[in-house]
Length: 191
Image 1: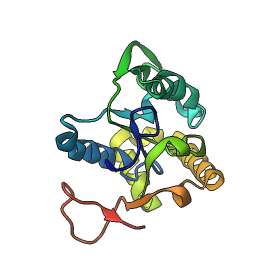
Image 2: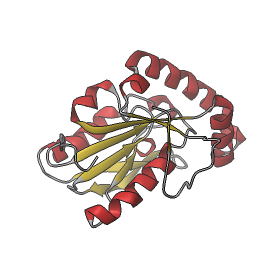
Image 3: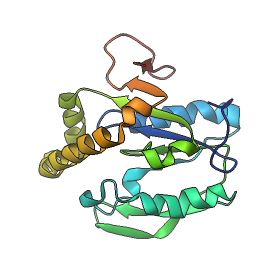
Image 4: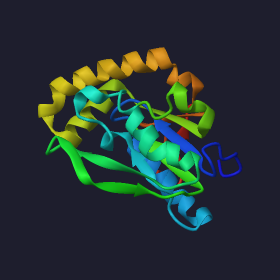
């Protein structure tokens, strides 16, 4: 990835996409940690869940990411966004800065969507069985999210089918591998 071209201004943009509960956040964090040494510092990671205006903003949040983060980086300038509070159900007032860096990792559902593909240095799609993804989400957020989560899963399936996200990914990662591996140093590649 570091040998690949910067296509978002001077920044190599990495999108870590896939359905909820697949392991995207964990993969993105480990990738950022692995890049910290070669880059001389950990690259910024933007989570699309922080940009959503609640459950109904599953894929329509993109203008906030593009205007606040991607457009400035295209011009070699730092970006920023306001983080959504799922508890308060509103955007917090203090902007989260996104510096100009050699690499930016954007993680979340629809992060590798068609509109951004020309600017991606790497598109990753993380997947896992539906039952495991559901169990992970409930363990993380509680059973009260089940009605919204089921709607969310329907929206994910629809988006991924139209966008053909997994087909266009550079790397397909198993978010629930059954073979032994060192999770701190490796991932299991499906394609």
